[in-house]
Length: 137
Image (cartoon, rainbow, N blue to C red; front, top):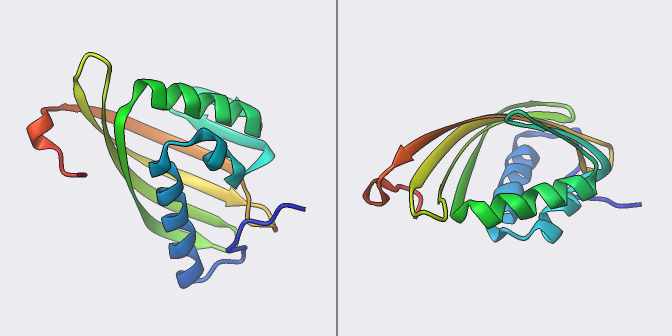
């Protein structure tokens, strides 16, 4: 049985740790590693895309990081209760044409008893920026 520490129910310390672990993993831009934090049957909404299953999550992340170049992410815990969390995030990236963006969003997370994320619902907005306006270096 897969276990991804820390496991719920969360307290302040373990909730903050879970968010930091997610941030660190996503900043590796390694779909193989990142997808292991999700259940086999994970349910996602990312912008307007609905994704079901760990393998589909991995495929999504691979596409994401092929298009969102020099990706850098920062996450912040906004709240938690038992096995759920609300997280604010922002990340910067540029496309293949060199246009930089800062993307802002909120995520709702739900974890199973083994600490794997079983649901992730993300709302995200993109702002075009100049490279000189980057803040996440």
